[in-house]
Picture 1 (spheres, rainbow, N blue to C red):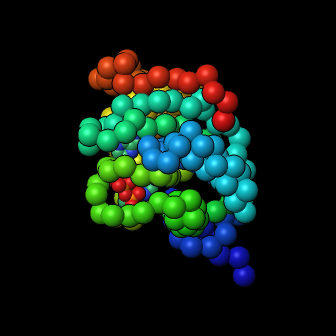
Picture 2: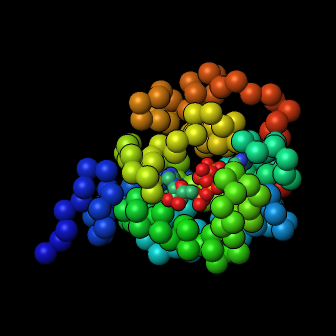
Length: 182
Ligand code: A4P
Ligand code: MG
């Protein structure tokens, strides 16, 4: 008997149709460009997921905790048959496989960070999973790569990505689009 899908695709079980999700990728340790490239490759091999677009790589000034190396950030767009919680689980496993250590330092340096930015037009407010990502609207390193992929994408309750960029207070020197290929 097929399991019914929750309104936000949160419950465990197979999603009957695909959902579009956007994943924010960040790294600032152990050759961050290579870490991000490896992560994009690993995400594209996840069962039930297929990568549709990948932004450029961006070199970005650390946000939240300033005294740490610059980050490399990117965003990928996925079609996925996984529920949002299943996607979180596989992305956390991937962070661990790529050597992510959780030392309890919030916003601290990391080899790989994978955040679910958006999952369709779902709004999810759980401690383990908040979608749209809780800081999405405040971060140039998330909004500029997202804008590169889909400027007109609506962010539930907040307007389009380009509207969020126009309201964003940021220093253009804090983010640089790189010409490197992913
Ligand atoms: N969690 C809740 N919602 C989500 C979501 N939408 N996606 C929970 C992923 N995880 C989500 O995350 C902590 C908990 O958030 C998880 O257990 C998950 O269930 P974590 O990855 O273990 O720890 P963290 O990343 O240090 O904490 P946090 O608060 O998620 O930090 P962020 O928001 O990931 O920020 N500056 C630049 N320039 N570039 C960056 O990439 N990244 C951070 C980390 C700080 N500064 C940065 C960057
Ligand atoms: Mg995180």
